[in-house]
Each structure stands twice: as C-alpha cells, then as structure tokens.
Amino acid sequence: MSERGAIVLLSGGLDSTTVLAIARSQGFECHTLAVSYGQRHAVELQAAARISQQLGAAEHRQMNVDLAAIGGSALTDSRIAVPQAATTGIPITYVPARNTLFLSLALGWAEVLGAPHIFIGVNAVDYSGYPDCRPQFITAFESLARLATRAGVEGGNLRIHAPLMAMSKAEIIRAGQALGVDYGQTVSCYQATASGAACGVCDSCRLRREGFLAAGVADPTRYT
Amino acid sequence: MSERGAIVLLSGGLDSTTVLAIARSQGFECHTLAVSYGQRHAVELQAAARISQQLGAAEHRQMNVDLAAIGGSALTDSRIAVPQAATTGIPITYVPARNTLFLSLALGWAEVLGAPHIFIGVNAVDYSGYPDCRPQFITAFESLARLATRAGVEGGNLRIHAPLMAMSKAEIIRAGQALGVDYGQTVSCYQATASGAACGVCDSCRLRREGFLAAGVADPTRYT
Image 1 (cartoon, rainbow over the protein chains, first blue to last red):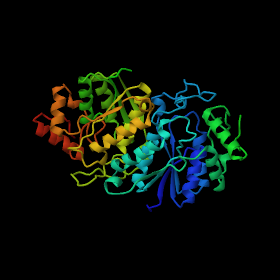
Image 2: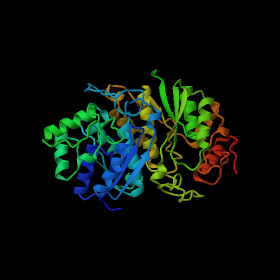
Image 3: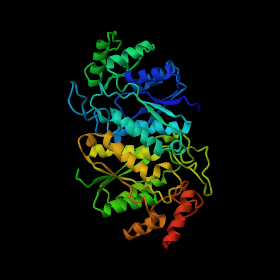
Image 4: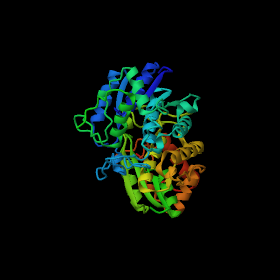
C-alpha cells in the first residue's frame, strides 16, 4: 500500500460523494467503504457502489452491521417516524455512535491494507445537531486510532480527514461541481423510494435543497 | 435506566465472564453484548448467551458484523493459520481495530438504553501483545465516548470500566472463582470444536492453562 492509500467512507449521499471527489483530486488511492446498518432503504448503498466506480476508486466494499438490533433511531427503528420538519437539539434521526462505529470499521480495513488515511464526510456547519460531527470528535478519534492499532504502535501516522468540516452545504456543492460530481447520482433522503426518489421533507432533504438554492446550482434531485 | 445500568461486552471466554461476575457483584444492572464478527466458531457465542443468563444479566443481545469482509486476521480469515506456539510482537490472531469496534457497538447500545457504564475484559498483563488492550487505549476511548454521544453532550458521565486491566491471568481466575464463576462453561480457544473442546495449543489456550496452573485452581477446560 502506498503512502496515498486511503479508506473513504461512502454512503452514496451528497457529502461523502464530494469527499471521495476531493480525495481523488488530491491524488489519494481510494478504497471506498459503505456500511449497511439497518437504514430504511438500500438505494443509497447501490448509489455508493456506482459512485465509487464512476469516481475512480480502487475498490469498493460493503460491510453489514445490524444496528437495528439496538434500535433507538428513526433511521434504523421502523417504529420511530422520520420527522417532517426541522427540529432543535439532537434529532431522532441521530443513530447512536454511528460515526464512531463507521470510523472503527474504516480503521480495521485501513490496518489490513496498511492505508494511512481515512476520509469521512462529517460537517459541523449544517450538521443537523449530531454530536459525532464536531471537529473535537474527529481529533479524539485520530488520537484513539494511533493508540488502537498496529500501525500506531509501530510509529505509523494514521490520519483522519474530514475535508467538509468547516464548509456550508452550498460550499460543498460548489466544490463537488467544480470537480465534476454528478449529484443526480447521490441519494441523501432519509426515506428515499426504491427508485431513489427523495421525500423532500425530511431534515436531510431540507438541508440539501437549501444547499442547492444557496449555491445557485440547479437541484438535480428527483422528488416524489 | 438506573445509574447502575451497564453494557458488558461478553465473548463467552474466561476474561469477559469474570468481568460480568465482577460487575454483577458491584450491583450493576448488566446488559450483555456478544459480537459475531466472523470468528472461526460459534460455540463461544452460545457460551456467552448461556453465561449471561446464569450470571443474572438483565438481557443478552448479539450483534453481527462481518469483519471477515476485510480479512487480515487468523481469527476471521480462514486462509491464515492460527499459530501453535507463543510469538513475539503483535500476533496474527490480532483482529484489526476489534476493541475499538466492540466499544463502539457497546456505546451505541449504551446510548439507546441511557446506560452510563460499559465494561470490557481487556488486560494489559497477559495481553498477547494487542495494542487495543492497553490502559491508554481505554482512557482515549472514554474521552471519545463523551464527545461522540448525546449523553456526553448533555453532560452525562459515560465510563468505560476495564476491571481486569492490571490483573494477571491467575488473579483473574481467583477473582472469578471467589464470585462463583464456573469456568467449565467458558470457551477461550481460538479454534474450539463445535462441542466447545479446546485445542490446547493456541496462544489463548496456553495463557489460560498457565493461568489455572499459577492460580492453583483445577483446570476445568475440555481439551481435544
């Protein structure tokens, strides 16, 4: 594995797709990882596999974790409804410890490949109020990763990259557009239909729609 | 959930069984979590469910993660042989980022339940050379957990307990015996048979056997 080897967490949504485009533009050899964790639809996982290939990743893998077994989120527990409007505080769509888990899985694969970089599309600006999307969380995980791993013990310099951290949704969209990302391929909706059409009313749809408006970019999303 | 609510990571082996006995003796309300991660045999998962009930846990759950998808360890990759003798350095039975992943899953469930405690059976004395069994790793994860979670953001005091950290295998066995643990129910072997019989030659068997010898306790393990 070269020093440019990277694991890129790729959900098939707008943010992680932009992260992959950024990592590729910076010359990283990208191994994309999608995590199936009991989210309500599989259409974003299919989008992730397609986008990985289109953006020139070296390989794509999907890992399955049944977070639905512990419930607690509207995204994994079918008994909890996805809210139709903006909320304050930490919303019910928050999946407990999701980014900690995703980064752990990426870290495991990074160790196996000997890849010193991990990319994740967390964002502290339009972050929906999730605690594990803040810069101090990423810094803490990087410290943990160096203690937790063979690479860290042997003096390797594992890095967690969160290139979207300080960007607004509009800035993310403009950055992706400049790199040629086709956002029509991405799926952000919390309750997309099997064909990938978005509800237009959930938090994720709302942030995305406002992002295209603020960026002055035509919204390619198919809404139901 | 009471302030004594705890997630206990329970593999069905000697160490985590002792941890459960200790947590119960300290009055914690224990929710045990076994993780099926593509390890070579399911007999330890069956042991975990049985032991959880015997030791009076409130409930037991199993989560499935296919770490075999990323390979890299003799414990999850059937193409890598389990070594038959002690090795130096980090051994091939090391599963990349395993404890980071296990703690992430426990953290997710802890959040859902509102349980402020997580117990894990890592040990830095007879630790087989795994980087994620050291005290600084546990401390780093505790810091991460407080940043990563709703409970942490809202001022909750999440704690990671590693009560075996400074104990020798003999001390662990004596502690468990004093609490009435039946070690004949536990499975430690990396390549146990379907009936739970141990190989007697892998690293884990060797440490366990030496532990019983040093503790002056009759070894109840069934060997092949």
